[in-house]
Image (tube, rainbow, N blue to C red; front, side, top):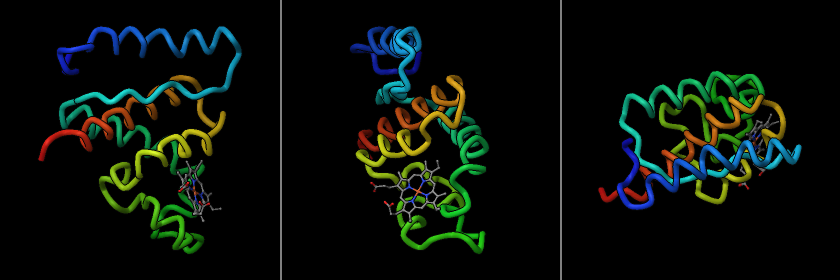
Length: 127
Ligand code: HEC
């Protein structure tokens, strides 16, 4: 595991248990976003996966290359910026999940949560 030594195992347990608990309740609450450190290759893969999953739903306004893009949306995040997830403020991550709603399947939701957990890990990391 590349997560921090302290509480690392607990994080993993929560990360694995929480979605299944919520699933059991039939709840649409998105999986928790848990700050964690991932290596660059894992991060790049997660980002590519989440980009591919969400562009079809969110790209029309959040992709600068499209004529339908909205300046207010691009200011929040823009898929043409390579590291677009880092553009989001911490509180906007919850909104990101909420606006996605039930668009993705549970595996997709888990990838979104994992990506933004890694984003939080990067934001917290000392420069
Ligand atoms: C029809 C255009 C449009 C689409 C499609 C769209 N957005 Fe946005 N989005 C906007 C605009 C405009 C804003 C800025 C104003 C606002 O907060 O609504 C925004 C803002 C946001 C914010 C920041 C909200 C805040 O509280 O600061 C998030 C997060 C976000 N969008 C996520 C998404 C996600 C995820 C999708 C796909 C499921 C999506 N958007 C699809 C237009 C869009």
